[in-house]
Length: 303
Ligand code: RET
Image (cartoon, rainbow, N blue to C red; front, top):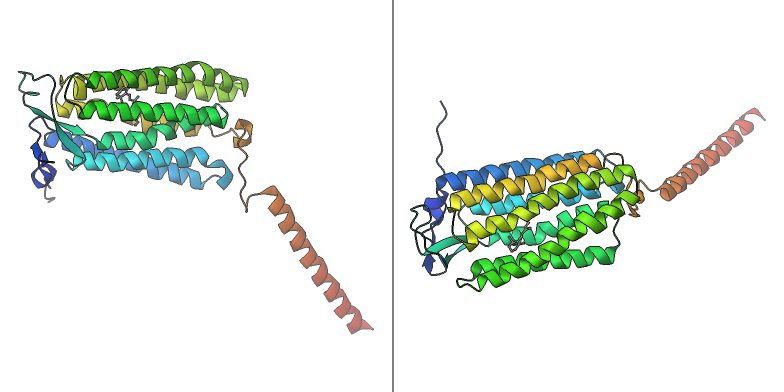
């Protein structure tokens, strides 16, 4: 009854770009998986937006940040599923295993563009939850951007020098982990037991997951140990935990926490108390004035 539609992305887009052909590349299974993760990210994004619409505008900051994260990821996953957003790079370690045998590996640079946009947003989710001062947030985000860019440059380098970039990235990650596990965790617990609990849950999940990313890099872009399809699953599972699952936990954790407790002074014209008061005054003045006119008219009628 239903016609089975095949995934044509590999045939349409091919493995030849920038004057080279990737002979170590994803298969249709990898592409299907990337599209499946894209679908999950999209559904998560709309769910977060739906949950946001049920809150006053001044209480939506974590919904919006997290929705942006998963929507950006959805586009990156759509690109990878379509066999786009990559460039072939000569491998430093040629292997005899048929799954990774070849000269040029498909390196998805679009993954790093995604991370460059989304990891600062994820850190903002966490550091705003911990109520950290904005200069601290700015610095941690900067360190995070160094980590992502060094990872990208390292992935694009063919020689042993790629590991130099990898080392810079690992130092940056160490700093971020220290921040999450120590400074921000302590800061969050001082703001209240409930805030401390949300931070502990989401911060610990993040710490464990983020440490696994360089491991994935080491066996994929770095060491050419596992096939691009396995790379898709490794990074895909990490991203599913680090984005939609993390986001759902964070939003749920914030359900009874007012942003003002985190030092966030968010004003909303319509929901604002001052405006509400003013609007109340205007409405009551109109009511007074109209009852005054009505009284006058009634008086005139009876006199
Ligand atoms: C790289 C390689 C260089 C060294 C290090 C890395 C760490 C990457 C991380 C990425 C996190 C991505 C997330 C994406 C969410 O969807 C760049 C792999 C340390 C931690 C959380």
